[in-house]
Amino acid sequence: MRNTILFLSLISLVLSATAQNGSINPEQLTQIKKSYKVTDPATRALTNALTNNDIKNLILDRPNLATIDHNFKYKVKVLGISDQKKSGRCWMFTSMNVLRPMVIEKYKLSNFEFSHNYLYFWDAFEKANLYLEAQIKYANKPFTDLYVDWLFKNPIGDGGVWSSFTNLADKYGLVPKEVMPETNSSENTSWMMRVISTKLREYGLILRDMTAKQAKPESIQSTKLRMLGEIYRILALNLGEPPTEFTYRFVSKDGEIGENKTFTPKTFMAEVLGPIDFTNYVMLMNDPTREYYKMYEIEYDRNVMEGRNWTYLNLPNEELKPFAIASIKANKALYASCDVGKQLNSELGYSDVHNYNFESLYGISFGMNKAQRIQTFESGSSHGMALIAVDVDASEKPVKWQFENSWGASSGHNGYLTFTDYWFNEYLFRVVVLKEFLDTKTLNLLEQKTIVLPPWDPMFQADE
Picture (tube, one colour):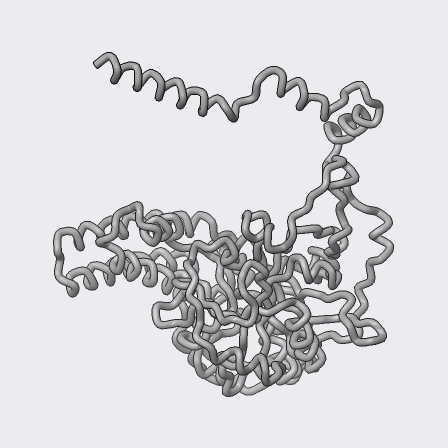
C-alpha cells in the first residue's frame, strides 16, 4: 500500500512539473519585456502612432500608390456593375457576370442582369434537401463522427462556387432580374439563413431519432418532404415564389422594342445563351499544398443532390495564366476567386503585395508562403469575381489584371479591382476556363480519376 501511495505521489509530481514546463516565470518575463523598450524614442513614437491611429493608414506604402494604373491592353467588353448587397452570393453574381456580356451583345442592350433572387431561392431549397439526405445517410454515426459534426456546424449558407451555379442553371434555368427582383431578405440574408439553419439542425435530430427507432425508409422520406415543405414556405415568404412561366421582351440601347414572348426559365436560358454546355467549363486551381497536375473533387461541395461536386485541376500559376489570357483576348470573361482582403486598397480599387508594409511598422518579419498561409487558415479563397482584363509587357507577359466586382459601382475603382501579377501569384486561387482555350496536355489531364477530399479541408471555403 505504501509503495502504491509513493508511486502515485511521484507520478503527481512528474505531471505537475510537466504542466509547469510551458509556463512563464518572472525571469523569462523580464527577458521578454526587453523586446519593448519604452524609453526608446522611436518605440515611444510608434506607440503614440498606433494608439491614436488606424493601423492600415500607418502601414500604407505611399510610394507604391504611384504605380497604380487602371488601363489594360486586353479587356472583355462589359457593361454595368452589379451589387450583391449584404449577402454571400458573390459566386452567383460572378457566374452571371461571366455570361451576361453575351446577352448584352446579342440583343444590343445598354445593360442586363439575370435574377439572382430566383436562383438564390432554389440554391437554399436544394441545399436544405442535400443536408437532410446527408443526415439520413449518417444517422447511425455518433455526434463525434467528422461528417456528423461537419453537418451540424454547416447546415446551410450563402456561399458556393461556379459548379453551384451550373447545377442550378441546368435544373432550373434562368430569368431576368425584372421577373423576380431582389427582396430585403435576398439582399440581407443573415436572419433568414439563421432561421433555416435552426430548423435544419432540429430536423437533423428528428431524422437521427427516427433512424435510431428503425423507422421505415418510406416514413423517413415522407417526413423529409414535410420538412422541405416548411423550408419552401420560409423561402417563399422571404423571397417570393419563383415563376414557372413569364412574358418578357428586350429593349435595345437604341430604343428598339423586341417581340413580347412567353418563356419558362429553361426556355429563356436557351433563348439568351443558346445550346450552352456547362461541362465545357473547367475549374483550374492553384493550391500549392497539393500535388500539381492532379484532378481533385471536394465531397459534398455541391448544392443539388444529383449535381456536380466542386472539381478542379491543380496547376502552377505560370501554366494557369496563359489560359486566362487567351480567354480574355477572345472576349470571354472568367469566373475567378481570391483572398480579396489581403493587401487591398479598397478606396483605390488596387491590390498589390507592397500596398501595406507591416514589417516597417512593427520591425518584425512575416514569412509565410502561400502554402503555409493555406495550411494555417491564414489565407484562402473568400470572394468570387469576374476576371475581365490583363495588361502585358513587351513580351506579352502579364503585369496586372482586373476583376469586375459585385459590390456596386461606388466600390473600388468604379466597381472594378485592379491587381498586380505578383498579387495574382499569392492570393488568386482559381479560375474557370472554357476547354477551347486549353492545350492538349491540359485537356488530357482532365481525363484522370479525381482524388476525393473532405468538405472541411482548409482550402475549400465557398466563395461569398
